[in-house]
Image (cartoon, rainbow, N blue to C red; front, top):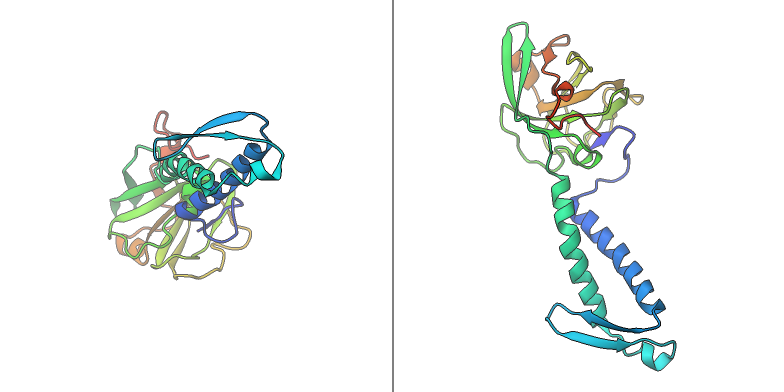
Length: 226
């Protein structure tokens, strides 16, 4: 989970977001339903239609059953779930990232997180990461960022990168579930951060001062960060 000023609370999974949005939308729909003063035809999932006459009388009100609630729930889940699922898919087209080290170039297969939702989820709950894989977090310019390891199950190296692609700071072997802000409570001014397997930066010879390709500066890539 990332601490970049976007969220410092509990981890939010796509499933939790679906449940919360379903709850809120259902409540709003029910409030609007009771306020109506006309005859409505509401389609239910079974394909039939029930005509409900609304009035302020207690007898009419009692006619509304759990069918309405189930219909609203089904309709909302159908419309919300695709939105939540797409929040985990980066729009950035880059799949491989080149890192220029003093010993030569190395390549890392990356996932790119460019939105608050994807950055917050990060690599949480992953039980493994391929040896030459990682996740690149891209932020808007002029932002202090800090990470922690809440709900992260594997050790990670964290590389903090400036706007020109220069590596400013490396946290080696960040430990699972550690809530200590990295690199510190005030964060570091960075344009991006790269997470790879713990110990991998040393194995690949990656050091502070090395450079990565600044994909956020390339037009049409969708990697700017929001």
